[in-house]
Image (tube, rainbow, N blue to C red):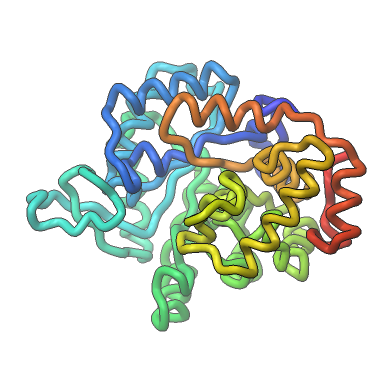
Length: 338
């Protein structure tokens, strides 16, 4: 599979490369990187033929958007697709007064949630100014899920549907953006969103991987029925499908439990039998589903970028997928590459 090959989104006619660039890492997620390092990674992605870039105001409190803009500003604008998010507004503040959480040395802006109509319009304007770009192609309502908001999720969801969704529908109608949707961590929330509003796409963090296929129950079939495109982030389940079942392996941002470790070991044994890299199986599996045009693995170095590109190019024999099915390591109804 060529990571630079393109797939067309049925509802918006956008063409995105099957491998996108997830820009959370260049927002200093978990570890700081220099502007020069971030620029090198973006350049390497471009040189590899990647033409889809995804960022958000919350990534590094504006740092990811600023670095994306710097790296893409002088590229031909009709040659790449850019997505960002709404739902948080940034306000200048002293660094010493900001709780950056997982973001290391982010920009000196605090953020607050705002899923209102006016706040959404302002968010798009602010993002364009941070990036210094003429347009955004895809606008996503960010993290209206239980993972982010806990018990307040139903209230936040309603606010977003009445505010952010209405604003984005207007911007799409006016041609300001080409596609709109949600970026969430849970299939149930993603499905509720596309049942509620006329969205073009969903960015789903994990939830459809070699280890998780509950999305096949109703969410992905609904996306196929309605021509909703699904972009998948977190295809390695935050680590274990890249590292394998090593001591300290991470699964969905926590230490993998014994059940997950054993399942990954069994997948690894099948990989060894057929000479298939685990990472290649993880990424190529996701892209076999007809609703999924792109995946966006995050990278923080040129080496990681090059490694991800190579994972796409590995040849995987059909018998490999058949053996995973036989051992009940993937669902029988899961589409696989052929």
